[in-house]
Image 1 (spheres, helix red, strand yellow):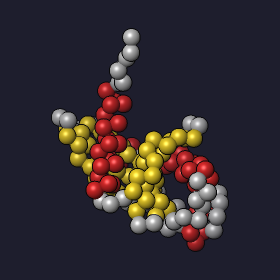
Image 2 (cartoon, rainbow, N blue to C red; image 1 turned 180 degrees about the vertical axis):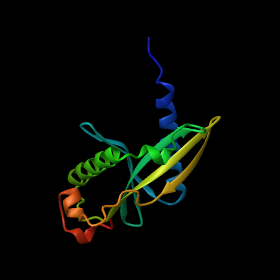
Image 3 (tube, rainbow, N blue to C red; image 1 turned 90 degrees about the horizontal axis):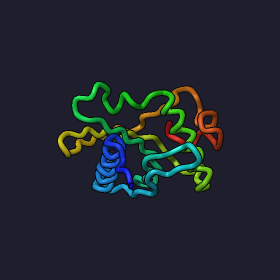
Image 4 (cartoon, helix red, strand yellow; image 1 turned 45 degrees about the vertical axis):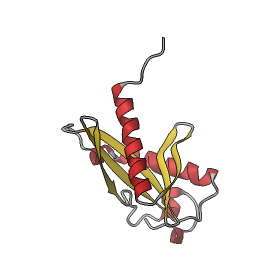
Length: 142
């Protein structure tokens, strides 16, 4: 007997669909969805006007105790950076400008509200070369 996915997985998948739809309406090109490398995952890899965008999608039900943007913890940010490293290595794209965005999705009775937050991971004084482990610091905006 085949089991259906848990409600949280279905909600997350629907949230990712809503996020991809939002980005498509904005004219972005979706390069990959649910890209995996071993234990690392990127929800969406997109391109906006020549910039690679690693998009994390966080979906929560309306009225949840934690908002979608609060779910992007420092630990999750580190995993996203490692996943981006793997993607850049796999696609030999270290010279491409890139950034990390977050799409917050709130679900309520089968409808989804989406909000894009750009540049959610910044390294301040830490150079991208140190943060990502490769390349020259001039190629990355964060």
